[in-house]
Length: 168
Length: 410
Image 1: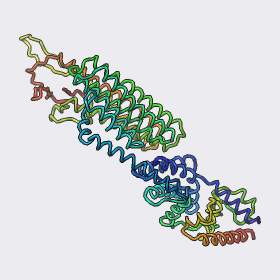
Image 2: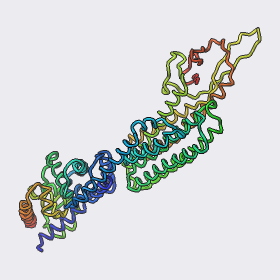
Image 3: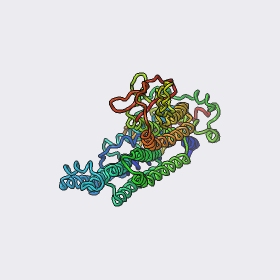
Image 4: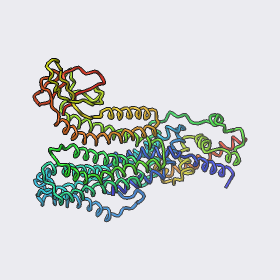
C-alpha cells in the first residue's frame, strides 16, 4: 500500500509538474526561481501527505502550497508593467487583436497575464489557463467560492478594459 | 462570444504552451523522486487515493487490520517458537548446524519480509555475501560436504536472483539511481566474498576445496557483473540527461572508494607489518610508492678471503602501483565531475572500478603465492640489515629511498 501511494504521488506529480511550474513562473517571472518553488511545492506536499490529514483535492492543495510559498518567500517580484512587455518586444501600441495574439509566444502571453492586478490574477489564471474549478480555486486561495467568483468577474472586466485601452 | 473574450481565451491557450523542457522535467522529477524515497514514513497507514472523496470505512478498516494482523502473526510466531533465545543461538550457526535452518528460513526471511524497497535489496545482497563467508568457514573447519555445498549454492543463487529482480523492477520504474547503487553493491559484495575466499592459505584449504568454493561463487559473481553492466547500459541508453549521468558517475565513484577501502583493509589485515624502515611505524598507502619486487637470497659465499655482506630482500609480487593507477583515475574523474563533464567522469570511474576489482581479486590470490615463496627462502640471520622481532617478522633497517623498495613481510 505504501508503494501504491508513492507511485500515485509520483504520477500526480508528472501530470501537474508543468502546471505548477507555469503558475510559479507567472508569479515570480524567473524561470530558475519558478523551478525551485515548484520542486519545493512537491516536496512539501509529500511531507504533508505523510503526516497530515487526508488531502481531498490534491491538485488544489498543490496550487495552494505553491501560492503560499510564493507569498511567504518571494514577494519581492515587482508587478510586470506594459513597459516591461514592450522591452520584451510586445508592441502594446498596436491594437491588440486576435492577429496580434496569434503572433506572440507563450512567454509573452504569460507576461501579459502577469499584468492583471494581483487580486484578480490568481483566480483568472487558475481558471482559464489551468482549468481549475471555482471550488478548487477557493481552496487554493483560502477564499470562499463566492469571493472567487466575484474576483473572476471583476478581473475579466479589468482585463477587458486593459485590452480596450490599448486598442484606442 | 465577444472579441475580447476570444482574445483572452487565445492568450490563455498560448500561456499553456509554456512548459518545462524535457531536461528540466527529468531533473525536477529526479529531485522529487529522491525526496520521496528518502522521506518515507515506515509505518504509513494505508492511504486512499486522493481523488476518492468518499472513503469506504469498511475497506479502510480491513486494510489497516491486514497490516496489523501481519505484524501480530510474526510477533506471536516468534514468541511461540521461543524465538528470543533460539534466534540468538541461531545467529552464529553454520550450514549443517541444528539452528541454521531456523536462522536462514525464519530469522532472515522475516527480516527480509519486513523490509521494503532498497533496504530489502541491500539486505539480500548482505545475505548473499554471508553465504559465501559461511562456505569459507565450513571449509576452514573441514565441515564442507557435497550436500551442504549444493544447499549453499542454491541459497546464494536465490538471494542474487531476488536482487536482480528488484534491480529490473527499479529500472523499469525509472528509479535509475537506486537500481545502479544496488547493482554496484551486489557486484562489490560478491567480489569481496571471492577475495575473502581466495585469501585462504594452503594451510587452511587444499586447492581442490578452494576450487570447490570458487565454483559456488563464480556463477553468482558473473551474474552480478552482467547485471551491473546491463543496468549501466540501460541507464546510459535511456533518456540521457546531465542529472542522470552525474548521479551514476557519483555512485561509481563511491563504489570505487569502497573497493579501495576494502583492499587497504585486506593489506593491513594480511600484512601485519607495513613498516617504515626508518621510523618503524606503520606506513599508509599514500606515503609509499609501491612497485615491489624484493627478493630474499641467502648468501652462501664461503670464500674466506672476502667479507661478504648478506643481502636480504623479500620476494613478493605486490602491484600496489596498480592501486596508485586507480587513485589517479579517480582523481581525473573527480576533476571531470567538478567540471560537470559527467560522461567523461563516469568513463574514468568505470575504468578505475574494473581495475580496483581486479586488484582486489589478485590480492587474494597473491597472498597464497607469497606464502609459498617465502616458505622456500633461507635467510641469513646474521645480517645487520634486518632484525627478527618478537613476532618472527623481519624488519628492514636500511634507509629506503623514496619511490623504491619497501619490505613487506606477512
